[in-house]
Length: 298
Image (cartoon, rainbow, N blue to C red; front, side, top):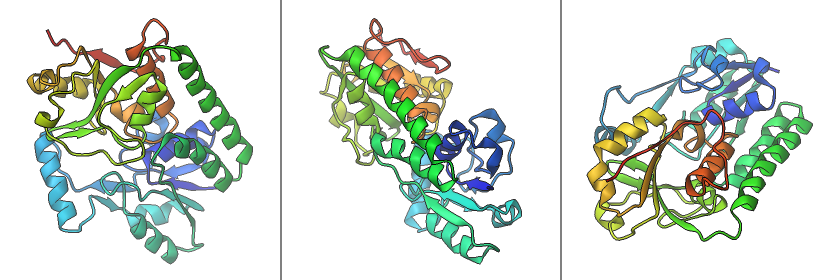
C-alpha cells in the first residue's frame, strides 16, 4: 500500500506501526522520524518565517478571518505519489491542510484513494487512532499491539504518582497572547499527578490574558508553545519571564512541544512521562531523548 500523510502526528503513527516503508509523501512539517523528512512534501504554509509570537497570532487570525487556508496542498506532488490511502485531519484549521480540500482532490484522482480523517481531541482518541490507521493500512494487529504498549507506559506513570498530593499546573501553549493548554494536555497533566488550573480536557486551547492568570500561584508553569522545540520554548519563556513570574509559580519548565505535546501522536506518551518527572522527579524517570529546560525565576 502507498500512503500519503497530511498530518505530522499521523506520519509518526505510521512509522510507529512499522509502516514507514509504505509512506510515500508527507507534509513540510513532518520531521520525525528523520527519514520522514526526506520524503516528498505535500504542503506549504502561507505564514512567512521570522515573525514574533504576537505577529504569528495576528497573521493567523487575519488569514482565518478572510476564510483562507493557512496551508496549501501541492496537488501535483500528491498525484505523483499515487497513494492508495491519504490521512488528513479536520480538528484544527491552524495545523494542517483543509480536509475538505483533500477529499475534493482525492475524488478527482485516478483510483480514488481512500481518505482517512484523524480528529482526536483527547488521549483516548489518540490511542484509538493507532487501531484506525493500522486497520486502514491492513495491519490491524499492529494497531492493537501499539495501543497496548502506549497504554501500559501511561499506566506505569499513573501508578508511580498515585497517592501523592497533586501539584498545580498552568500549561501555556502560546505566550503572546497567552493560550492555555487544550485538548489532550489537561488530561496528560492529570495522568502525571497534576491538576491543570485553567485548561479543560477535550476542549480547544483558550486565549486568555496574563491578568486573568495572575492570581493562580501554580506549583509549576510548563511553557509549550505550539509547534516549537525546546530551545525556542526556552527563548520565549525568557522573553516573557516577567509575565510568567506574575503568575506566582514555584517552578517553570520549557518543553519540546513539537515532539510530545502539540501533535496528537504516539509521542504524547513521552509527554506524560516527562510531566510525571517534572512534577515528581523522585518517582518518575525522564524519558530518554526528550529534552526540557528548567527556567530560572529567581
